[in-house]
Structures are given as structure tokens and as C-alpha cells.
Length: 108
Image (tube, rainbow, N blue to C red; front, side):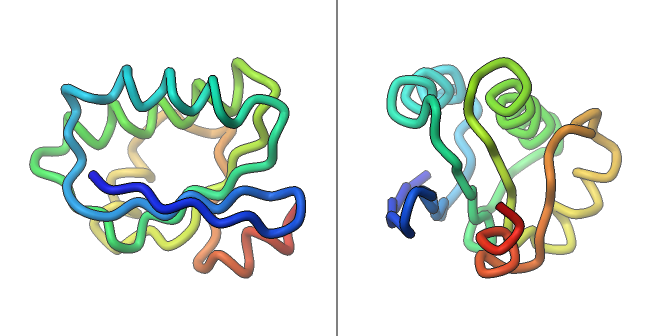
């Protein structure tokens, strides 16, 4: 998975691309906690791919934990139809999902 960061005022946009590697999920969570605490963050997932639904459920769980258990304010943007379907089955009620980065930015 590749990560690209863009600052938009006081909001960090994290664009994720490539394939989710669930074996690196905990290091991803740790890096997010170290770098984005006390920040507003949009995770853009429009260029992200996954193999197997268990991996993406774990990934959604990490984003949910970051939003619920820290001082980080997390929004998600750009879910593909496959991600939307899996997200609807997840237990990530605290995560706010937007169609676009622009929509997520405006929601803060």
C-alpha cells in the first residue's frame, strides 16, 4: 500500500493506493497515531484494492479505533462499490463516509 499526504489547512488528506496488506496493519495504525494525533484526517480510498474481505474488515476496524480511541478526527472518502458494500457490514458506526475528498473536507 502506498500513502500520499497532502495538507489542506489544518486537515491532512491521506490518499491510499495499491493493495491493502493486512500484515502491516498494526504498523499503519502506529504510524497514524504517531503522526496524526490531534489532527483532522481524511483517508481517501478510491485507489485502494484488497484481496479477501477479512483484511478490509480489519482495516476498517483500525480506522474506527483511530477515530474512537484517540483525539484524531477521521473521515473516509472515495469508497469504491466493493468497499461500500463491505463497509455497510462493518461495525464502524463512528466513521463518516463521503463520496469525495472535497465533501469530506467541507464536513469538518
